[in-house]
Amino acid sequence: MENNGFEGNLTSQSATSDFSALAFVINSLLGEISTATLVQVMGVTQAGTLDPVGFVDILPLVNQWDGNNVSVPHGTIYNCAYFRLQGGTDAIIMDPKIGDIGIAVFADHDISTVQITKKQANPGSHSRFSMADGLYIGGVLNGVPTQYIQYNAAGITLHSPTKVFITAPDVAITGDTVFTGKVTANGKDISNTHTHTGVQTGTDNTGQVT
View (tube, rainbow, N blue to C red):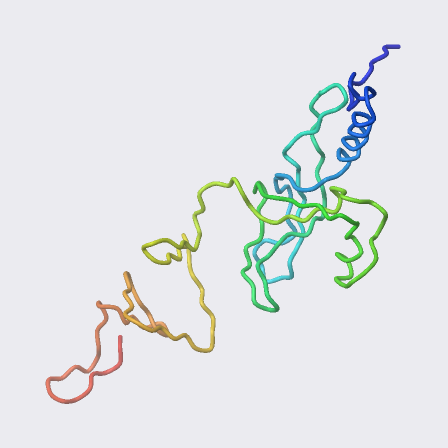
C-alpha cells in the first residue's frame, strides 16, 4: 500500500513558538470559513416571468487546494436565493441566466429555515459560514448586453432587439417627442404617411384616419 503524506497548514515553523502555534490554529480555522467568491450560474428556477424571486444553482470558480497543493474544483451549490431589485410590490425583473458569472456571499449561520418560511426563525443547524448557505448577489465579468437601459452623458437609452411593452391606465409624456418609424394608435397609422378620408377644401374637418 502506498503511503502518501499531506503538507497541510503545518510548517517547520509552526511549533517554534507560542505565536507560531497559535497562527497555525487560526489559519486552520479560517480555512473552514466561506465569505464571498466568484461563481457561475448553472441553473435558474425563474426565466423573466412575473413570479416571486427564485433560486439558482451556482458553481464556485476559484478552486480549492488539498494538503499537497493539488487543485480540487468545487461542486455545484444548489438552491441559493438570488438578489432582485425590489421594494414592496415594485420591482425590476431581470432574472439570472445560465452561464452568468457573479458574486456569491455566504451567511454566518444556517439560513435554510428562513428561506422556506420567509419569517424570523432559528438557524436550521449549527453550521457556520458554510457554502450551503450561499446567496447570489448578481453579475460581474459578463459580456456586452443586447437588451439594456443605458445611462450616459448623452441621456438615457432604452434598447430592445424585439419589442417594448408598456401597460398602464394612463401614459403621460412631457416635452418634445421624436418618433422614428411607423406610429400607430388603436391600429391606425398616425405617422407622417397617414391619410384622411372625406377631404374637402373649406372649413370642414377631415374624416377618420385611414
